[in-house]
Amino acid sequence: MRFAAIGDALGLARRDGVAAGGMARVRTVMNQSTPQTQFPRQDALTILFAHGAYQMAPRFAARKIGIKHVQVHTLHDLKARAGEADVVCVSMLWRNEVLGLAPRLRFVQSISAGTDQYDKAAFAAHGVRLASAAGVNANAVAEHAMAMILATERHIVSGRDNQARAHWRPMISEIGSREAELAGRTMVIVGLGRIGSRLARFARAFDMHVIGVKRDPSSGGEGADRVVATADLASVLPEADIVVLACPLTAATENLIDAAALARMKPTALLVNVARGLVVDETALIAALQSGRLRAAALDVTREEPLPATSPLWSMPQVLITPHTAGETQGYEDNVIDILVENLARLSRGERALVNEIV
Image (cartoon, rainbow, N blue to C red):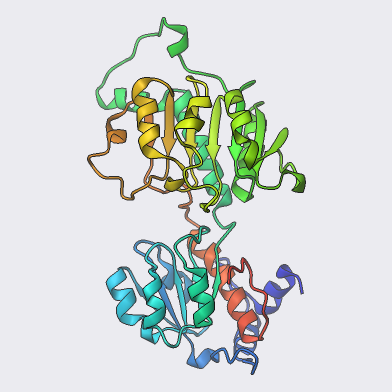
């Protein structure tokens, strides 16, 4: 059954409301546990939502599905209450030792699209299923990346700084120091998943030339003018006016942008990272920015988060920093809960395939 059809059958209780009959169908399907999984019945199921900011429990309660749930906001409370949970919905609060504290745990629904914080082998060993929230923030992250690009290239950041000082900046005589236009320039996007593909369409709408970099370029261009393999990244870096990192963190992408990669980029290039901080060798990046080897960087992620107050990145005028908020959006909780409810229904029916299945 297709996702849309399953959603109709379950009456997913999206934020625009569902009929009472839809809610009855949710309860009926959720109560149909099967011997294959022995997944708890709805009346015996407890979901533990764990996030420092997102209001997962109130948004879930608004669906009126009738499943017991609680929310915690700290790692301490997550560990303290893990033993009550059959399902945990979590992201960066997760620590793999929680598996040993949660004997009832059957399923973890990640609130984040990235899953590098989860030990997949440990999940398999404990018989715990895992699914990501991939796709729920693709548009938001792509929009954020484009916003950071525009803010940097059109000097919006320095304009805001000047506003705070009540300073009216005069016209700029030095041509190379003026605002830049995007049309006709080249963007290299590393990672052509949902986020990278969306960003490619944005960039082409600005009449940019887009080169996509992905592990398997034969699987499709995803809106890019040209696609190369990750192994060929070094060959296209010299062409880029803007390099955007939108790839997952893996063993192959850790420190992908190192001193050698930075040396191949134009001194006038902009590096944008909306992937993970570990994709960039931060020491090499700081050195490149300090020496003028790289013009600017826009970072939504850093190697250590929160970024330490002692980091030189904070005080660099050519660096724009946002605190890992690219995926933050007003509809985030509801988008994740859509996936959670669908996966709970599948587990209740004894189905193996999950939406965004990881383990």
